[in-house]
Image 1 (cartoon, helix red, strand yellow):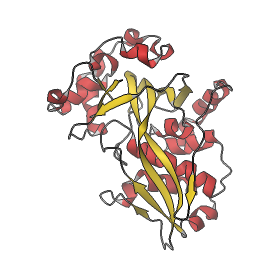
Image 2 (cartoon, rainbow, N blue to C red; image 1 turned 90 degrees about the horizontal axis):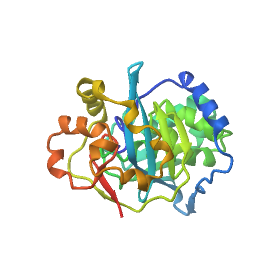
Image 3 (tube, helix red, strand yellow; image 1 turned 120 degrees about the horizontal axis):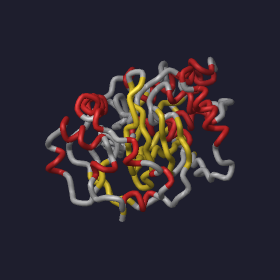
Image 4 (cartoon, rainbow, N blue to C red; image 1 turned 60 degrees about the horizontal axis):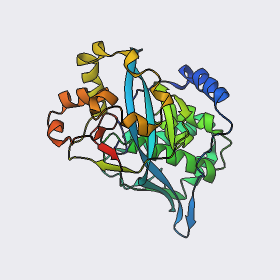
Amino acid sequence: MGGFEGGDEGGFWDVDSISTLIDKQHANKSKNTKKVKEYITTDDSGYSIKAHAKVNIFLKITGYKDGYHTLVSRFMRVEDLYDTISFVPCECDTFTIEGCDDIALESNTIYKAYKALLEHTNDSEISDFFNEYKVVVTKRIPSQAGLGGGSSDAAAFMRLAKEMCNLILSTDELAKIGSTIGADLPFFIYNYPCANVSGFGEIVEPFEEEVLKLELYTPDIGCDTALVYKTFKEKCLADISLFSFSSWEKLNSKSILKLSSDPALLNDLYAAALLAYPDLKEQAKEAWFFSGSGSTFFRAL
């Protein structure tokens, strides 16, 4: 969220521990699923790509394993809210990012994605390319808002770098690399409009439905994902009931939102966010729902 560290709804893991899971997921994936066409804008100022926000239609914690929470969630792209990642011609001595001046380079998810691509491919064409281009980020997605901004930025960077640097990587391979950076990256790398996401975030199964037109409200409260999850573990984990959301992943999002007007029913992290950030309760609106670890509320129009 916001671009950068602390912006995922699950956890972090090393690539070796999830390779088998992603391979299995890919083998079971429907071949008829329609993917959104990758739009890369090309002009005299370079190349650019959109990094869309997401909301969690529902988010249920299913357990706690190896230091991280497992979950099941419906992710949906927000069509009209996105950052823009651009590669702009520039002679650069080192990897250069503009538009994220408040984030240290080493903490920036885009820089982490760059380093991960270099390490995985050992391809000098990547470093050569970014000696001739700088990365410019135009931010629109609010920080620490439960909208996945940092993960989306990193995933968009990886998809654009793959094309511009002629990297011979499948989407599954790219998702594996992205998963070492943050739990939300596989969803954004697969680039499905809607998907059921489970496990630590590494299992991404496309869900065929129309993307809802959404209205968002993000109060001036930034929610630190790590703190919300810590609060959930300490205060709420013992109360989860796995039976309360059985088969939700089979329902369309409009039906799920009609289940209840209580955001706490659809998002297990809402109660923890209220405990960690009591002022959020004053910002809540009737029949609005809560995305991720917060602080964005949303409703379908």
